Length: 298
Ligand SMILES: [Zn+2]
Image 1 (cartoon, rainbow, N blue to C red):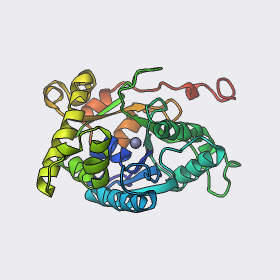
Image 2: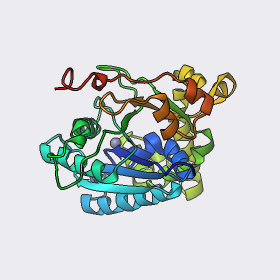
Image 3: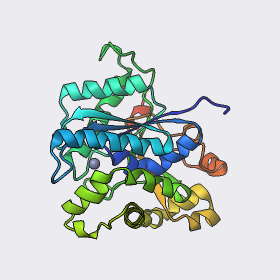
Image 4: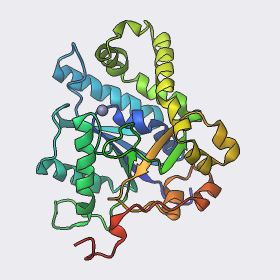
């Protein structure tokens, strides 16, 4: 590899968010020899109708570790209680330390508008950490970063106060089975809690093979609308021929609080995207911080 491996930090609220929202793209990075670290800020203890918290935390930690291992990534589960994450200062400091320790080339996380408070606060904590990553006197026990990395957001369907807008789209057709393999490891979620919470636990088939096939169908149904919803971006990225054929994608939006995703950054961070499209791509710099320091950035 000509360049050193990338360090990718994918920060979700729960011990399956990172793989649900970015597992296919993570699989592309891992296949290229890059380092992917999946993180859950909460321990997932609320995600079951029958299993008590401490046992569930242990089970979900094992499930997440197995899911990450499918693609050669790692999974860190932090100790915050599921359903109770907030934006207190000690949590922001923890996120600053986490990001500085990982020294990532790229961070992906939730947007801060979302139905789940844990997702919202995860997005907010990363947002609030972003500038402070570079300030030496904040959390001086962990060396500060010279610059904030690029920060992307997972796709979502929420519209208020603003819709998700895709700045990066990634074809995951050829790694979809890896994504299903990852999610298949989260047994407590996809075969127990989520069907129960949705009111249809009887739909889950018996047996490992039948369950996996059922899950693959459910995941495909959930992801499939994205490619048509963002078809223009898919065609821009992959060209007319391939762009028209792509069925399954993951999509990401640039955070204006991280570094801008210019053409050079896009080429470096997404080596598996087509080269020509990268060179021709529009620079995404929806970013107040491009103004000189001391003007809009006192
Ligand atoms: Zn979640």
